[in-house]
Structure formats: C-alpha cells, structure tokens
Length: 462
Image (cartoon, rainbow, N blue to C red):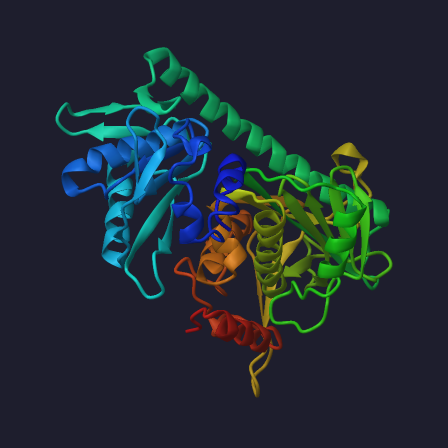
C-alpha cells in the first residue's frame, strides 16, 4: 500500500496510486498547488551529474515530514506554482537509476515509492511521483563525495537546508528513543494477547495432556490509524469471518469478534478459544494460539516430558505474520519496517511438589517433530533443551509480510530460528532464509497443506 499524504491527496484529488495524469496536469496554474514543506516540482529527471541533488531532496523529505517529488511539472521560481507539463521518461531503466542513486548515496537508505503516470495509454512518458514517507530511521545523511563527509538535509518551507550539529544529535537521540518505545510496545501487545487467552480459560489444558501457548506479535515502525466504531467493527467482522488466515487451509479460523480497548478481538468457536487475534487501531497486532504438547518418553531426570510440534509452530507463525501485516497495511495505513516477535509459553502442569517462582507450576517443554514415512517406523526428533518460556525477535518489511510470498517465508525463518535456538536448534528445517519451503522436513498432513499453499503463493519448494 503506497504511503499516505493526506494534504497532498486532498490537493491532487485522491491517493497517489489512484490519481490520473490529467489530475496532475490540472495542477498547472493552481495557486493552491505551490511547493511546500512536503511538495517539490522538477521539470526534468535528475541526470547523472545531479545524483547528489536527488539524494539531498529525498533525504530532506525523509528527515522532515515526508512528501512527494513531482517530476514532469515545471514551476515558477518566484510563486512556486506549476506552470507547464513537461513529460519525463518513465522507462524501467530510469526508475532503476533513481532507486540505485538513493540506495548508494543516502545513509541509511530511506524508503521511496516510484509512481508513474503515463500521458497516454502505452506511453513511456508522463509524470513521475517520488513518494518519500516520514522516516523513523532519521536522521538520513547524504554522502558528499567531494568532501568525504556526511551531511544531513531537511525541508525548510519550500526550500532545502541543513540540520545543525545540535539538531543532528537530537535526531539520533529521538531515533534510539523510538526504537526503545517500539520494543516496549511489542511486549505490551504480546502480553495483552496472552492475557486475553488466559482470561478465557484459567486452566489451559488440552485433552488431558499438556499445552503450550504460542504468541506472535507485530508492531509497525510507522504506525497507522483505524477508528474503532460500530461501522469499523461491522466491516472488520464481515471480512474476518470470511477470511482463511491459516496457510494451506480452506475453512475460516475465526468465528466471532469482540471490542477491546483500541482493538478488535477475534476468537474461534472452541470453548475455551484456541485461537485469539487482537487487531489494534495503530496497526499493531498479535495472535495467541493454544497448542497441544505431546507426552514424550519418560526418563529419570524428567518423568513427564512434553513437546510442542515444530510443524505447527512454523505454520502458525507464517499465518499470523501474514494476517497481522495485512490488517496493518490495508486497514490502518501502517508502513515501513516492522518489529516481529514469537513466544512459546508452557501451559503444561508440573508434577513437581515444589512450586516454581511466582507460584506457577508450569513444566518446561521441548520442541518435537514427528516424521511419518510410509513403510518405515515413526521417528521422533526432540530438542536438546526444554524451556518454560522462550522468545524470538526479528524485523521485516511490512509489505513483504502482507504479500504472503517469499518475503514472508524469509522473515518467518529468521523469527522462528531465533525462537528455536532457545531449544538448542539452530534453525527451523521446514523453511529457509532464502525464502523456500523444504517439503522433506514436514510431516504429513502438514507437508501436503504447506506445499499446496507454496505453489499458490509462488514460493519455491525444493
């Protein structure tokens, strides 16, 4: 979903990805369309000798409130109002050149979106919009190759200036403070979902065996905004009760909705609910899923060991990330990168007569994977380490997660690997950091489900 610029959308006549060339051409002579802190016009492309100017203009917008560079409209130098259409080249080569220039001349590289508006169907000329969202990674510096230094531009009204040393220091402090705040936010979002799941059942216990609670949380770096009102709740309910969020499945997961503080809560029909999802108004969200914990072979040191299935965990993490990212991007307008977190918490009662700290009696659980090969004995693989709770962390591009393809698998591999390392496993064998599925590492029937999904999503299975 393209970045949202509400003032510019009102001026142009709609979201950037939906407006037409004619709407942009109508800005010519419009006194309200003058350049401003978030808007700049260019009559031509940034040629090679002007790559420093492109880097400077992009970094300045990212360091301020974000905005749009419009290539293909000339403006009056005094009034800053568009005066003429000057169509520019819209070829793939031109667009690649812009992306490469920004990536190699701005540190850190900010997010940009290139939106081409052809002046006629099939034409390779028209107006090019370079959308630069406000960045939480600011300050962004441009590389001044002649002076071998970094400089920090900013928008100052309709011109570009430079951050002072004090402003640079303040911007860096703000960046690190925001990172801390986002870290705190994902902990709270995760804990809220766990509390909801626990509240629905004071004693989570599955089929008389053991249980584990898997939580998956997501907090976008650039938050969005969704109103929580009767209209939104009805709309989300209609959508979610028809959605199939679990990969490789054909039936709905959630069957009812509730309203919580600044969020909509989704539940399944089980009593107590096995699946809980909380969709927050700022684009954050979390799943909390109750898993069965298998009883394993007993021994003297651990007479009641249990293990949680790795196939189930991997599928749930990928499913939750895709579902939560789509809520964040499409409903709330959140964008950029996002913090993601997965946590496995034991809900298996300990048989030890000694209470654990805090009065809990949760037993440490292993990770277990059962491989079923036709004609051969069942082989049970168990992790070397057991934990009562373990947490994995990662970051990903929100759009990659929402698209639900290779980028989703790559992000899930990093996140699940970070979680599994607490159990003595280097990574999840079912998926790779290259974004592929390894069918031989899945047990039936999950192997069939996940390979079917991979084929539909364009994910390589090898």
